[in-house]
Length: 326
Image 1 (tube, one colour):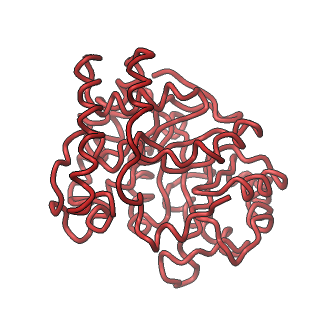
Image 2 (spheres, rainbow, N blue to C red):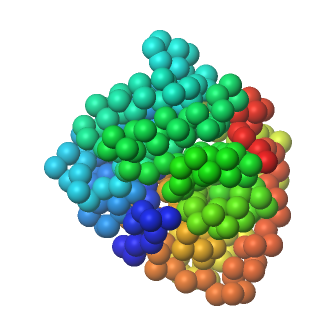
């Protein structure tokens, strides 16, 4: 696996998102043995960046990742996220990035991951009630103590990124970015490149849609985040199939899978962009990491760039309200 750098942190060209191993999708958490196998296969293939969060489960995903990387910590860049669980005893999903909560969350993540330090620690969502300067100041203290090594933000807008970076260097910003979610291109990516901050793309396969395997609505159980996602509704999903169809056409030309084409498109956007496709199966991890060997032609990239915008917002209204905007 080729390597790249996000700011001064060396990572594999493609990482692995681990949320779906524990929550978020139909069947999540049903087979931890296969999830561990997928994690081990990723490491064997040279994937170093593993992405988790305290709210995944909550807590169970960090424990799973911690168990899986035991004895192989030196091969891993561990990334986790805080800020969507108020401590102690708060309701999961409520933003809290107050300095006291930052420290409590990080201490908990360290225990669950079974490590002395977190390589990359993200604020999961911007807390409207805590100035970003206070949050990053608390993280900077933890950097000085050696408990975290790099600071990141997730779904932060350009103005927040500038304010945060003025307090302590931000290594990476994580946001959804894919062939059907291109929001970061307008305001966030230009600021990151100006400041020398890396970009980590979550859901680069559009929650599975860009793989071409989701052709009809209503197939997900209530625990699946796609069950109320506007893009997967009975009204919007048929409208979005033209996107999947064009990706499949390019894949046939490139002798690749649709997932590999979607990832190769992202990789072509710059060495400072690292996609973290999620999977809980070893065979899919192998397929996704092979995208680093897919070279799309300029004509194919242009066709993909010209895909129409997706029908429907990429999150529910409540989730969209939690995303910081410029």
